[in-house]
Image 1 (spheres, helix red, strand yellow):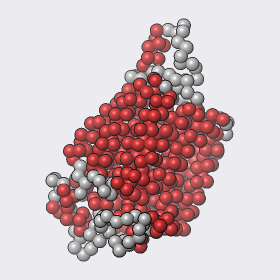
Image 2: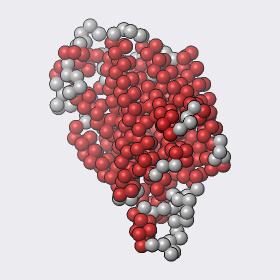
Image 3: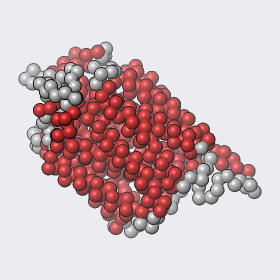
Image 4: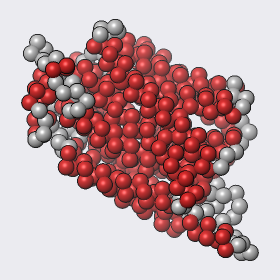
Length: 465
């Protein structure tokens, strides 16, 4: 790459590629907000008292019920509602991952975001109709959100220079981490002042507005963008000149199945999704059962870990690129380092949460650290597929998501069942199960992970399906 422009000679943060990263950050923020706002609103949506018995209640109580409808859903039903969104997401991952290499990613992401936003507006009336309809809406919403998460990765095949992959992808994916913080921060106040249905209406409306911005500003290829500077375009194209092209070729399925480095990515990525889903979905429930605070304080406390998670994610992306640019560590060492930090640290702090949290402050500290440190995976297994098989990156990310989301929907459902059947020792069982999955995956990753393009992912490979 002798003719590649030096990064310092082209626009940095104020550039089209970073604008794309920020827009994808916003898309991820919105779909994550629409997904996890139910975690906090569920606290207001259910009640240990029977919400249907409004006889002999005051006018104020009746008006409050109109603003905040309450349903008599058991913990296992809540677990099914939480997990239902993953059924839809899992169903579309592989088709979308494959089709993202053929069709316009801009259109796939834009229309899916719009569909998810419209469905968010229908959640409150669906809940009023009954638990079956809200489950159906969440499954359909999962299909739309799964399309956004699976398709977007293909953007970076043409937009991300190798020395900036960590920063660009961390900015993009940190939207998933910032959303829980903002959602938990504001949803408690919205529920208290306007009622929990307004949470879904607000985030649904935000998604619809973002769709308009997306279709105006985003292009699939830097060659086609009307506003990109010549220097930035040449820099991106030259930096990717030696990367395998994206010409149509059959997927080397057999070679992929035999690739241990690829399985290392699948397992560690799945461990991340399992851990992240568990912590994001059930942090408000954990705080409610252990600390017994009202919904506004619950929102503030539940959101705090994700502010630090977002910071850690951005820090991981910049640190990984810095280590690589300065030749402090080789690429494989960088990936292993951040995988250890992102998968093993939550296990350590979860154990501290069980055995060393003796008061309010220690509980919040360990819960915050357990959530925040998962985001170090952004510079580890979550980007490793772009190192070993850039031409199949979108498809491989989809496969990782499928494996992880299957675990995530099982995680949400099983956690609800455990909480319902064994309230006393439920969190011990939940966190030890998470620990077993994480430790197994990190051992496999440290042994088999690679960071160079694999033979089956090169241009000359002609393996057939």
